Image 1 (cartoon, helix red, strand yellow):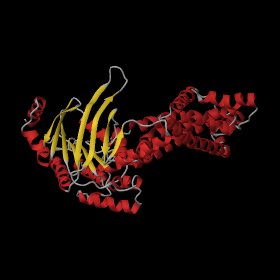
Image 2: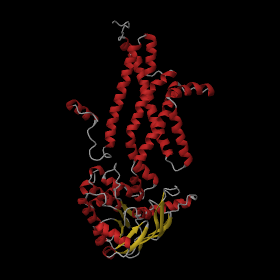
Image 3: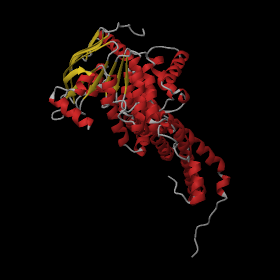
Image 4: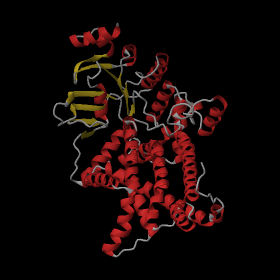
Length: 271
Length: 247
């Protein structure tokens, strides 16, 4: 598999169009309409910060972009390739092509989770090397080299042989970032990457993310860290009840929100 | 009060040959049934979580039906019942293995299924997000973790197999129990032989449990967060030294 088509600065990396998602679809009384038509556009090198109250659909939005939770309606266009959540189940050839497209998305979109989701039965180096060998087809040696390289980049050189259970939360998240970066992604998704961390460890991870942004990585960051949003974010979208309520430049939106709900949310979170 | 019963313990060493032969059969029977159940149980468990609905239904039926019968019913049905209708003579040993395997694979399928289901949902998400296929996510990420969780339950099943294997003596398998029954009948010393056999089973089970604890500790090291705590030998030592209750 190729390592990804390069996109010029300012060109679209990902475009979401009318994303809708309902959990427990068809289960009477338990349906939750999480996304109610979300549009999004992120250009090469952009850092888009997504804020909003819990349950507003931020995490689901990220999961729709890499089809971990495929959207019911709408489409995602990533590096010019458009994909919907509709799987062609009945035609094997189309199904195969769909699966290939899906893996193209996922191998080129890195994701960092709130709860790290490291593989507990593998060392840090094995965690990082797994996907490069299994999804990119690198040799064991190449993958090991790359994993050590990526772990060094996040300051984890001395922990390559450590298991996740032997690491602190901050160290786990560093390994998780290295794991995502080892795929050489064109887009990074951060789903509340610091929310499960002890307060004294948050700064280190934010620093790591800032450095990544400065290196030119295209990023979508779901976070409650308004300082980070203002400083590192280019644009901010505020989501509530499955919709984008307000969108704007990071500094303007945070310092001078126009929408009433955005104002209420920011007031609550900043005090 | 005097007992009318005259103990003749000297009969036991004299019959050691037969008993050891029986023990050997018990070990073979148990080991073979265990290995077969391990494999078959996993296959059934995989069918139970397969995306193909009829397969799931079939696997569900398998676990429900084969757990419903006792081993006693199984061996008699397989060895005498089936033989009478179809004229198939499975052979005593084979009938015993099949009976033990059917029953225990059904239990093990449930153990596997529960263990696989206990693996955190985020693990699958992370694997898929990295671009692994569903199959690869399962074999590289979910299965290895599920197996570790399943180990205690699977070993429990081995304990059951070793104990239950005594029942196959009813169709004339010359296992430890079969040998004992024959000796009791010929030597007329039931207390002596049953005692020795009972103790042998106890020792067997204790050995299996100890081996299992060691295995569990080795496998679970990295899943339980930090150090996994003292091992069984260490726990026993502490118990002796300080009267600490073994966990």
